[in-house]
Length: 138
Image 1 (cartoon, rainbow, N blue to C red):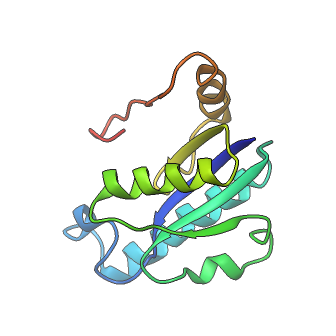
Image 2 (cartoon, rainbow, N blue to C red):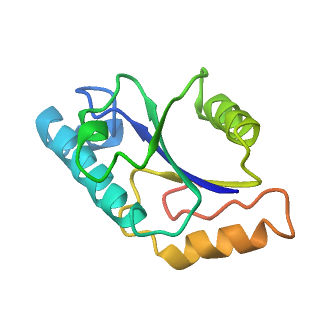
């Protein structure tokens, strides 16, 4: 079973996108985060995958109750840092029956589907696939 998860922080004031604080107000940052997640959820609804997960950190996001999101399985992230949260998610995903699991971040609303398709294909040959990021992330 193929599984894809959207990793996100709940767009609460002061929690997400700290690097933007010098450019935007907390309200603008919150709205930007919500817009990114809404765009990704809409796009993910079109992506062919057996199981789709919304993996959130913080409180349950209000977006989880929007129309079109009901097909996503909610998963509360746990762990001290991103590495631990990812490890815990992958362990949960595989315990739920996934044979391949891909994670994307909520700050990539224009991520081309071909990258996701390629990741699933590469997982036929490799245990792990990590995509590059121009901002120093992965």
